[in-house]
Image (cartoon, rainbow, N blue to C red):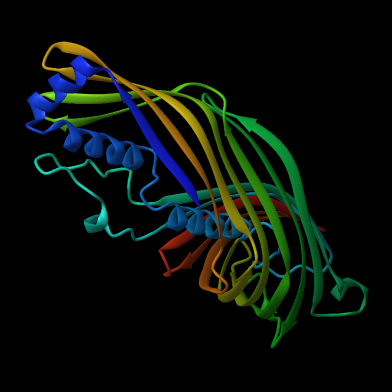
Length: 332
């Protein structure tokens, strides 16, 4: 890991800030350096990147296999997943000024992941091989927001075998059986800063601190996951299916961060605006995902003719990692 934060101060502004905050100038230097790390989420980059890799792995859940109502032919559709993983950084370990507390609202790492995917599958019951189904999914697409350019890609293949069912009738009550699912899930998301961005925080009641940054900011998430799942479904009165299960994932992905930012620093003391100086922030770091992740899954499906609209939640209590998927599929 390489991480540097270098600040070049305007001498007059440095003296004015030190006086207002009641700090000697060396204390001010330490305060603003650590404040920049908190604002840019650099307090614990290893933890953030680990969570980022885990979130990207979870962003595949619910997109590449079918867990709802019983099908006996072909199925295809589209789904979207949004995932988040919240970590636990020891805030007491963050250096603080003697008289001014660092604002740490952006210091606690929370990482996210997202994917959209097309899926197609076939259940071989219709050709005389009951209980066995295969699914494939994938998509590549670019997206841009106000400040970020991003590219997303995913590819997956799953095999599913049903035991102890199905039984009953979907018109009244149908047990979908116990489904065993495994496969390979691959995805990647790359985010790159394309515009200037601003941050601001209060150093004291009378002092607002601001940054305006330009340069290179890249976050590259990749996930290669082998899921092992067991699930079951229950269809009631044909129109509603509920399903639930558990999974154990073997994630093999990683997340990488590259910062090379030039930040213009300013502050307002009362009604007076000050140009504080310039900062150079450089970071290069990477971290792998957790080796094993246990999770629970649950969802609901609405069935109208060949259309099946679904929502699914995957949850791991490790770091409180959660993924929410939704989509629409058609079965024939």
